[in-house]
Image (cartoon, rainbow, N blue to C red; front, side, top):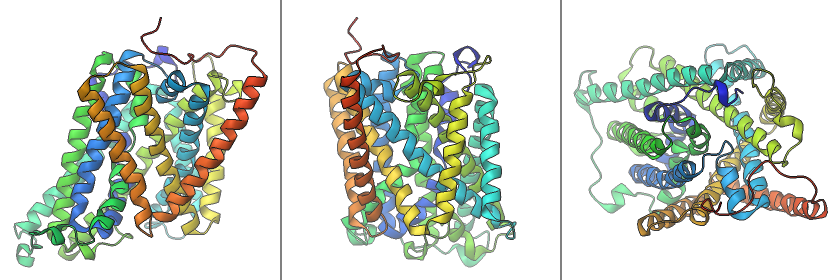
Length: 453
């Protein structure tokens, strides 16, 4: 991981593009099918609400970054606001969550690749993608930026391609006389599963927009730090428009109860038109999207591990860098941990590991509470800022609680609570040792207001 001297400054639009690259992944291309099957047409509302809630959290993180740029981002702000225990918990919850999610991503990438090479074992593809991801990380900030920007353009192009094809289908250019599904004209038609359909679907909307922590870690490289909020507005506006447009078109082409969690809604919507090579094209898109978000997650994991080490919340050697400012120890430990996660994902029964990764995704949202809480404790907020902060709290809490309303997401919710209890116990144990051994100064800032000198 390259250090500050070798990291090129970013314009606001470059951060927006990197944000899109780090955000659009299999969580949208495949997770949206699950959301549609749970909520029906009201999935549109789920994604819109998720976009608003995610932006409120991002805006809080952006303003914290503008006021006090920190390489450890949200972890440092939690530590300054609440104390060392919060920085420790925030950092390790994030790192462990991303670790479990990456094992799942690598397994999914391997399954997609088996679509073309069915005779090759999954672990070989997982190993190849892991090595490729590490190579991208080792190229430093410039290599990371270039590859992620290229993948962002390809992912946006894929969604725009679907929008164009779906529009052509509606115009009858592929035959079938432009058949469409009647638009919902009543509450029951829009929300066929009621509130118990909409609420569990919210979490999949959030998965489609997740990635603000990674953007928070990248924001420190902005040429003008005050552009962080502008970059976020552009990113979320673009994502919201293409997400909602593409899902709406899919719902117009095919009845909502025709979608399956086993297939992307975009493939399902165009199936009947028999467009040549369509499954192959979208399979390639899934691989690109999954690999892009996986590399971004690995980048963030290494950054957080270095921050934890510098704050004496992880073994000190993990914060070491080589002469060219590459954090080799952190990269090595993260790579080993990812191998363990891949093995678990391949050996565990599918449903059990799925519950773990769902729980890990929920734990990322728990960290958002730290961001919103730190925002209030470290900055002087206007009335409007407070309204948006509380709205963010309520929306995120509703999405987390909504997972308890459906059989697909409920086990992950319970497992996430178990994770929090375990990590809370470890944090209490660490607090005991910190009080017992008060020697040595930490490199990270101590608790207090950003306005204190």
